[in-house]
Amino acid sequence: MLLFVMDGVGDLPNDDGETPLSLAKTPHLDSLARGGSVGLHIPVAPGVAPGSGIAHLALFGYDPILHPIGRGIFEALGLGMELVPGDLAVRGNLATFQDGKVIDRRAGRIHDGAALGAMERLSQISGAEGCASKVVAGKGHRFALRLRGEGLGGPVDGNDLGRTGVVPTFPPVPPYGRRSRLVLSGWWDRAMDALRREKRANGVLLRGGDVLSRVETMWERHQITGRAIADYPCYRGVARLVGMEADPLPSHPDKRLCAAVEAPEDLIFFHHKATDQAGEDGDFEGKREAIEVGDSLLGLLLEKGSFDAVLVTGDHATPCILKTHSSDPVPYVLWGGDRKNGASRMTEAEGARGQFMRGMDLFPLLLARAGRLGTWLA
Image (tube, rainbow, N blue to C red; front, top):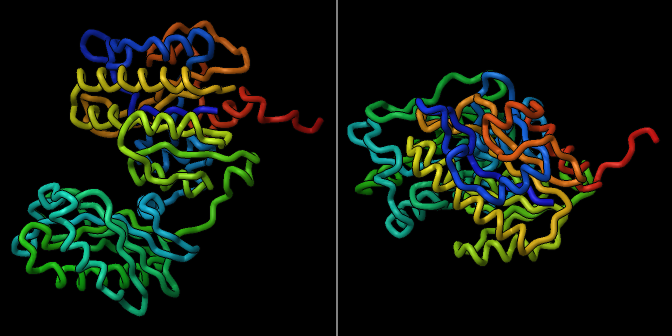
């Protein structure tokens, strides 16, 4: 089975009634649409603009309402950090401060080499309030923090207010998060002291904290194995959480494609990020081009691999006019099992004429199209 995710692919029509998806040349998506079913899905719930981690969890067939997992867990797992139940995992940014205020949330998008010294200083912090800490560097300004000790709870918000010109503060928390907040703020104080002499990366911002709780794996739920082909830690992290293989991959596209088609697992999850990036930039034409690149990658996978069922969709909509995630429905195409609904393309308009469902309900249908679900109560 192939689950191909064009991140943020859904959009809203422009003044001419077109979207990047409707204007893109997508021969491989069109072929799947003609031989399969096209519809729309709501990633989490009506009116909810989801984060990428939770939205992917839904695409893997898990109810995101019953599994409200903080982004810190996904980032830490995706960077290869080992977590055990009760560990508090947090997303972090190197940032630039002046007179106690944030003036750049990403330290000028500092590159890996320039960030090395700051990351080493953070790694030397022993912890806070009796909890041990571990830091793993991501790309550039990004890192993940793990705090391990007794009595930690989550989720717990960090101090990243999402804007500059402000003094970062840790918001009030419910009773179960008081110790987590105390430990987190104590570690932050030590981190700020450790970086005070740095020029650009002279501080950190924290967000998305949560405590790991066990989630049933795909093997336990469906007796299938899976492999993630994804560049970004968040998506590898969601995959690891549900038991998929999710090792970091070479950046060369050919090697990524080979890793996908040669993988022995039952399910291949292939992630394409460029569509979401263009949507967040408000770049309509760039998003159309990113969709066409995604379609070419899909074509190579279909040519080189052998799949019983294929699902192509997005984790959420990222409309160019909004430059952010939205609650709008997302188109999908589901191919396999000789099921057709008369569609000719995977677009928002064609999807509106097809079946409308929750994002979490697509995965059981993918399993069924591949003959992986038996007859219940036979």
